[in-house]
Amino acid sequence: MSTAVLPWRLAGFATVVRLERPRETVARPAVLPGIDDLRGRDHDAWRALFDREMPAIYRYALSRLGDGTAAEDATSEVFEQAWEHAHTLDDQGLPARAWLFGIARHVVNSERRSWFRRPPQVALESFDGGAADHGLSPERLDLARAIAALEPGHGEIVSLRFIHGLSLQETAAALSLSVDAVKGRQARALMALRARLTA
Image 1 (cartoon, rainbow, N blue to C red):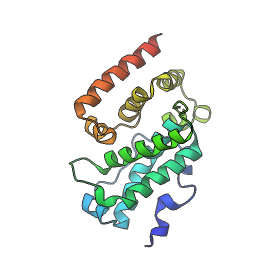
Image 2 (spheres, rainbow, N blue to C red):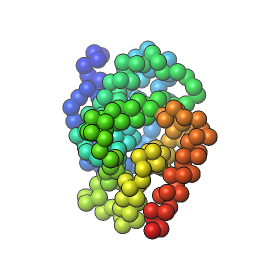
Image 3 (cartoon, rainbow, N blue to C red):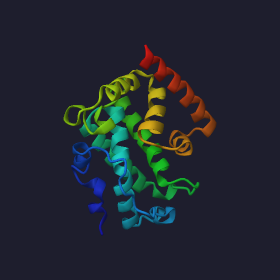
Image 4 (cartoon, rainbow, N blue to C red):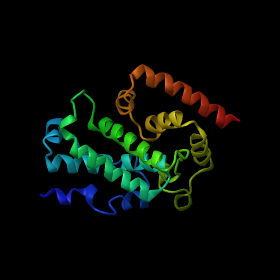
């Protein structure tokens, strides 16, 4: 298989993510790609990683950028950078998704800086595939607006932990923080979110 057919290099790969609701019970492969296989750039391992993690990375980028096309470009860039730097992937006992979210965070922040530091947005599509098409409940709409109004650091913690489902350890790895720092930021972010929701 040539590198030209790796899935993140195909235009429109995220279209299915935009058109479908996220599935909470998506059957994930029983065997995760091994770190050694990913470091060795095994195409099957990378395809399995892409199939498993692309929807979450795409939704993270969409939630931070607020634009489907920009989110698809950012997702593609995440996997491209991961592929290029596969040799840097360390086995820290965490799934490769923590490493990918760390790359995604840098790609998204770089993209946002290029937009002249405009404030982050939370796209409603990142919650359940689209507010208009899928009947986003008033509660979820209020939650999306409250998260969007949080300061960027708080919104990012809430997004990674509770929208994208990263563990404390995965979030710490993605943000290059200690687990205790994530716990502290999470507590402050949830207090700020609670204040917004009860105001």
